[in-house]
Amino acid sequence: MRRRVALAVTLAVTAAVVLATPAWAEPGGGGGGELGGDDQYADGELLDDGSGAEVVAGDGEDLGDPTAPRAGGGNVTCRWHELHGETDSAGPPLDWSLLTDPPSDWVGRQVSVLRICGDGGTYEVAEVVTFTLPVSGPPVVNPRDLAVMARNRLPFPPPDVAFSPPLDDPEDFLLVQLETWIWATNWGEVSRTASAGGVVATVTARPVRMTWDFTPRRSDPSTEGGCTGPGTSYDPSKRPEEQSTACSITFRHSSAAEPGAAYEGHITVIYEVTWTSNLGAGGSLGAVPRTTVMPVRVGEQQALNESGGTQQ
Amino acid sequence: MTRRSLSVARLVVLVALVLLSAAACSDDDGGAVSSDSTTSTTTRPSTTTTTTDRTAAIKAEVSEAYEASSRAFIDAAAIPDPNLPALAATHTGPMYEQRRGVLLALQADGRVIRYPENSQYRVEIDEGTIEVDSDVARFEICGVDDGERVVAATGEVVAGGVVTVEAHVAMQRVDGVWKLAERQQLAEWEGVAGCAVE
Image (cartoon, rainbow over all chains, first blue to last red; front, side):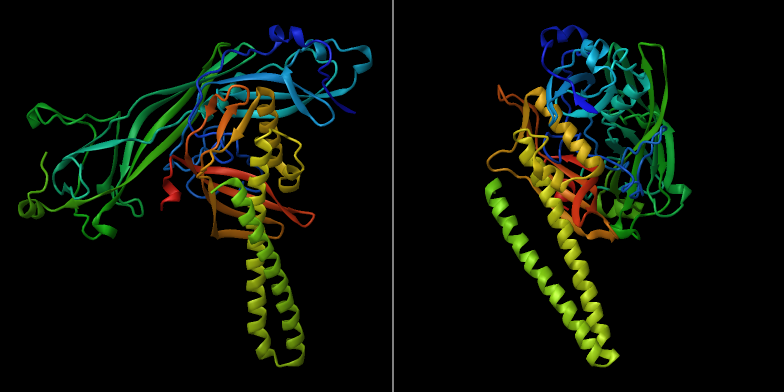
């Protein structure tokens, strides 16, 4: 028979035995409503059919469309709460002594408690867990599970990209046969933690490589490439021969024949995701790409002569 | 638009859909009688029309059921009440467990989800994406949500802001009733953006 943990007796002693309940970390983005809350989604077998351009992490988890924004969230903490009454109403933080040392007539019964893991605003996990009494104590926390929760709160920002010659205006265009510099202006690590029961997992996403493809619907080596690192921003106050970059492309053809007279630029940053824990365990959670899609016009030198164009 | 006017509007839509479904069934019966008494050449257009009507009626049912599930959660989260009958009546499977868990957590934390008086909340179902396979329907939605999570006792907003969300949805027909079974976020934008302005 399933029973809810009775509130009854020992609420006063709960705080000390609750699974680590540090102060709330900062809330994340993503809104708080019916659609906007990060916790308003649940996958199962029905949607397990793939829906297009999805990112699947090293552990098999779907991280969504690589070109879609991702709000992320704050650091995650986990705790347990009582459930009581026949209709499951949530109570205060759980006193584990109710479960580890129950009254003798409770032994063998099943009780359900509420597990909550969340940042300051929304929940990563909010689930009912059932135990058979007595229990030996709070379940051992798997640091890798915490790491996956922390990763789910990472924003994985797509690259903000700059070019030289610059593309400040929709009418601006790059030039064929001229080296174009590419660099990411928001290159940086992002990190989140998740903690429970004294176990803390820290996940870090580190950008390691940038790639680009300006003709994603066909293979054309002249419009594809990549580099390690964010690239170098071009400094117009310096002479060209005084600076260099590992991240550049030289277009061979104008984009005039492309749809909308522009290449469909896909600039991708690859994040390597790793985790560590205060228990010493750690490892890789795979590589996650995030892509910015943008139209890029490329013109012939003749166009430069006629319109003034742009220059490096 | 206020929540009340939304409810009234949906009620009107529901009544219209019921009448439409009844009309479709009536056409169906009429077509069958007609095919028995006339040549087969007159049957084909009738059958096609009936199939189209049925498909349209199912899509309408699914859309209405999805809206009802959203409304049920919003109503439950305003209390919050994980045992609101409308929740079980409109949800099933993982999504039901997820929703109940969130409502229980809100309850434990003394929080509610509320919407501003002039809420921008809206959801559009991309009808072109609705696929019905026996008792499962899948489709995509685009919604704008300005719900806020609020500490009931103090009014402190702990999560909020306007977001636009694109999501993949699965509804399942349980005992003849379409219910929200799964939902997977595909993309999210701050403000009214992305799929809401495309």
